Image (cartoon, rainbow, N blue to C red; front, side):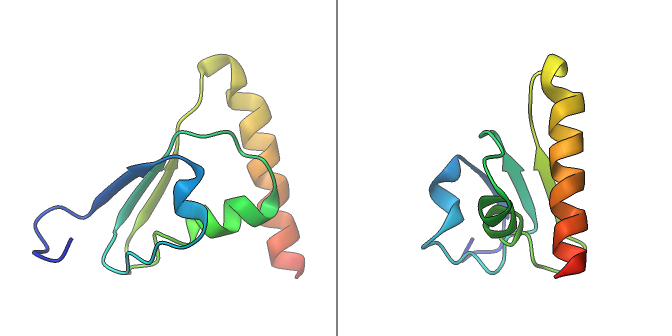
Length: 79
């Protein structure tokens, strides 16, 4: 990251708190979406302009994950 050659972060819930990777432009999350707080903290790692946040899950889980994340986004907008 310091050399600005590769700005991709692939991690589990360890990135939710305590890591500040301000140059990160792509976050790929492979952990379970537990609650809105962990979603906000994990997604917040992709805060560069034009950055991306990708959540990987099994195909069978995609509908539930989409609904959960949609609910989180609605809640965040209301706050």
